[in-house]
Length: 154
Image (cartoon, rainbow, N blue to C red; front, side):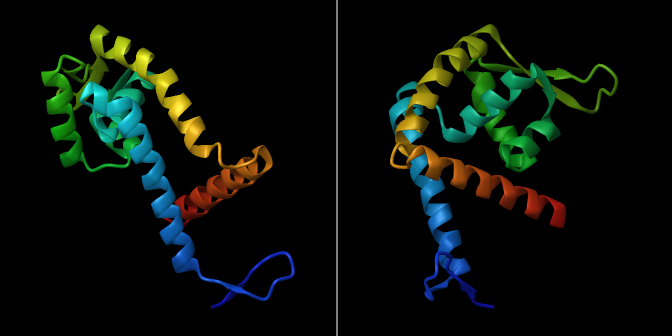
């Protein structure tokens, strides 16, 4: 199926090319934040996402952290091993089901996230400063719709 471009042009849009650009743009933003904010603190993007996810929820089961971070449980295990080794996060047994593990940030982890959030937001804002506010609103709305569409299709 060929999709035609908006605004009266007859140039066909290629969904594969759009997905490629979407992927490259997301990676470029990620790499920028990693270089400017995370690498100086020996932190990966995935480690930061895990810290931020747990911080926002205070305590969280590992399966939910993995789901929200968009990573496998096996990947999460390695990331948590690293973060735990640095004293940033701790594992606790679930209060109602000892088979489950709950993650919680240590005070050191909480301090680090509070330091990193404003810096990461500044780096993200710089990365997106290429877009005019109206363009940013359109992109944000389109991406939210795309996510909703694909989540409904699961």
